[in-house]
Length: 74
Image (cartoon, rainbow, N blue to C red):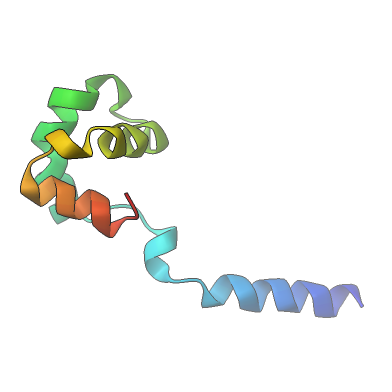
C-alpha cells in the first residue's frame, strides 16, 4: 500500500510544469535587474521576497520586467 501511494506522489510531481519548479531565466533576470535594484533592493538574494516585492510594484515596473512578473503568475 505504501509503495503505491509513493508511486502516485512521484508521478504527480513529475507531471507538474517545469516552469512552476524553476526560477527566472538569465534573460528574465536581466529584464528585471534595474527594477529589482530600484524597488526591491532589500530583497536581493531572497527569491520569494523579491518575487513578492516585484508583484507588489508591478505598476511601476518597466514593460519588460512586468512581462516577466506576469509570466510567473504575478
